[in-house]
Length: 459
Image (tube, rainbow, N blue to C red):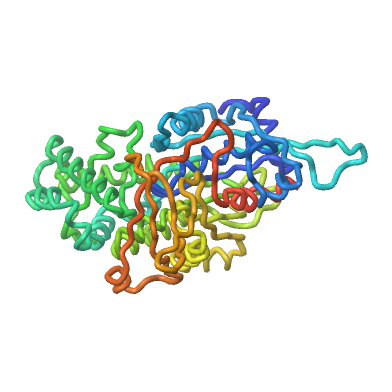
């Protein structure tokens, strides 16, 4: 074990003085993590200049002086690609940044004046903000720790509904020919595992979210490794005879155990349990547009994702040595895809979707806030009058460069019944990012998220 460095000791001192905050930003694919982190850093760096952060008291009162990037605490973790993201947004025409494919980290040093001035009146303070970007897909692997290979296989087969099966058709046909008791052939298992991974990727593209194993979707440096070459088998039960060594069943079960013990458990222990605060980003509109089976699937995935963190109040001792998340934000992203009067409905639907996890959090007395936001606003609201009737609308530029004026449908305020999707259709096209001149990015309620997540630290 290496001796503590000067940076380690300074971090410990800052945590003891409550001047360091570790914020986890997570969400499933297309939830907008990269856009959120890029805009967050951009807004804080432009604080006091072009940034519009009226819902953050420290900024509204002129006490937020700005932020700069400094070397992060863990130099072995990739740095969040802020500069490439901003370069993409300032191209002609602008484009959305490439999504991150693994863990990334960024440290900001925020300077501010306290709300209560000292005797000399010119006091300034610093808050170290560590930002962590984690793929939500990896968090969905946590339930694997409660399974053995047979029970996990049963759970995966039970979850293959009609719409999901379409994406696994090639794998289903191939795995039906596999004899679990036959001697394992590496090439055959690798080919079947790749077909299973293709099914997972296809299901994700179609809007499904509750997909395991998560590393099959974002393998990182494990791509091609045998530990990612397993898949569920049909017909397994707890009373099955112990498989013969070297058989297909024994090989798959061994790889599953290795994945549990060497990939999921250490990753969770080393990374996910050291945060102070968390924001979970949810592409609720995308799931609503994809249909009832995808919408239900998102609810299951989010329930799983939120089990991945330790929640609870923090004392000085656990702030120093056993951090737990003491404040949580859950945000429906891409709020600029619906007109402003629909935003409260978006929050109400989000809270209805997460009713059970929210009950558990409130029982544990963990402060939690639901939000709707657009980290980078790509549309402008307008009112259109036709035949004497005025209706809200949105104007924006589609990815193909076409200017569009849209009349979005109504967002339900509670979980929709099945006939909702037959009564009302949704069409939420992808918009191009706005043209910016290098200043602060336009947003919707990112300042409200900042106030909830770190506003109390800037008093």
